[in-house]
Image (cartoon, rainbow, N blue to C red; front, side, top):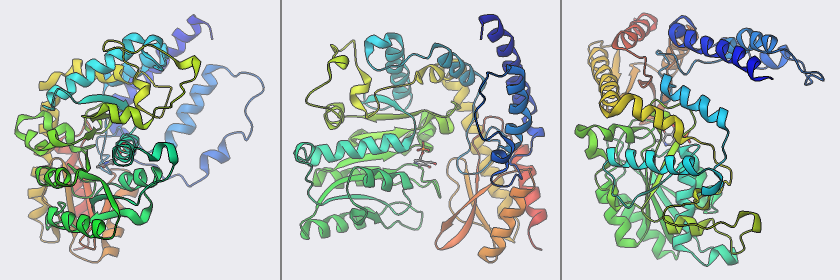
Length: 461
Ligand SMILES: Cc1ncc(COP(=O)(O)O)c(C=O)c1O
C-alpha cells in the first residue's frame, strides 16, 4: 500500500467511523445472526493474491458489521457498557500508525514516559498516594492476576526458585469478579484454596466472616496470602468495606488488592471519592479506563504500592543479553513489572481522553449517567410489577419482574431480540435479576426511558 493509497482508504475509514458514531442509534443494538454465519460466508482459505482495499472495506461493511453487537450503541446497557469516544479513537489510530513497542525505555522513550505521566494524572484525580506506581495492562483480569502473583511473591519468596508452595489461600467476596478466581488459579493457589467470603444484605464483603475464615485456615496449617476487595461489584456495584478489610489484611500481613475496574472512575468526583477510602492501605488497585472512562478497549491500570515485589515476581536471575538495559529513576523499563515483554502504546489514547475531556468534562458525563440511573430506579419503583433488587449505586440498576425466573428470562430475551436495547442478567439472593448498566458516553435519560418503556410493554400485565 503506497502512502497515497493509504491516505485515500484512510479518509474513507475515518468517514465511515464518523458516520457510524453519528448514526449508531439506527443500528440494531445486537444482531440476529446464527452461530457460524460469518464463517460460512467467508472463504475457508486466505487469498493467494492481495485484494483491493475497496473489496475488503465492502465486506467489512456488508458482512462484518451486520454480525456485530454494537457496544458503542447508547442503548447497549448490558454487562458494564463502555465507550470509544472520538478522542480515544484518534489516539488508538495514531498508536496503530506508530506501532511502537515498549519493551524497554530505550525502545519507546516517549511512550514509556507518557504512560507514567497519564497514570500520574489519573492517580492524582483518584487521590491515591504518590508512591502508587502505575502500569497499564490490557485488562483488569491481567492486572489482578499480576497483583495475586505479587502477593504470592511476598508470601512465599522461596517458591520462585523451588516451585514448591505452601498451601496458599486467597479471599474475595462471593460477589467478586471471576477474574479473581482465574488469577488465583493461574498463579497456582488451587481452586480449593479460594475462599468466597459471604456478604451482607447490601452485597458487601463481611469483615467478620473474612476474619473467621482466615482463622480457620491458619488453624488448619494453611497460609493465607491475599485478600481481594471490590469497589463496584459486577452483579450489584456494591462496595466492600475497604478500611475494615485493610485492617484484617494488616493484622495478618496479607496482600490487599482492590478491584475497582468499573466503579473506580467514579472516585474522580469529589462526592464519590469516599468509595476508595482505605485504599491507601492496599497493596494494589485496578481501574479500567476501558470501562467508564471513555477509552477504547483495551486499557486497564494497575497501581501498586510495592512495585519492587511486583518486579521481583516476574524477574529472572539471568536476563538474556538482548534485553539487558540500564534502568534509572528517569528511564524505567515497564516490561520488568509484567509478564508481557511487548507492550502497546496504550497510554496515547488515555492521554487524548484525559486532555480532551478534562476532569470537568468527565465528571459531567459520569454525573449524567448516575442521575439517569437514579431517575429510572424511581420510575421502576412506581410500577408494582417490578422490584429493585439492590441499592442503585453509580450507574447500575438491578431489578426484576415480580414473577418467576423464567418470566424474567423471557422478558430479557424479548428486550434483547428487539434490537432496541441490550441488557444482561445476574443472580442476587438466588433470584434472576436484570441489570441495566448505563455507561456509554452517548446514553441519555431519554434512551434509558425508551428502554424502560419497552420493558413495561413486554412485561406480563
Ligand atoms: C468488577 C470487575 N472486575 C474485573 C472485571 C474484568 O475486566 P476485564 O474485562 O478488563 O478483565 C470486570 C468486568 O466486567 C468487573 O466488572
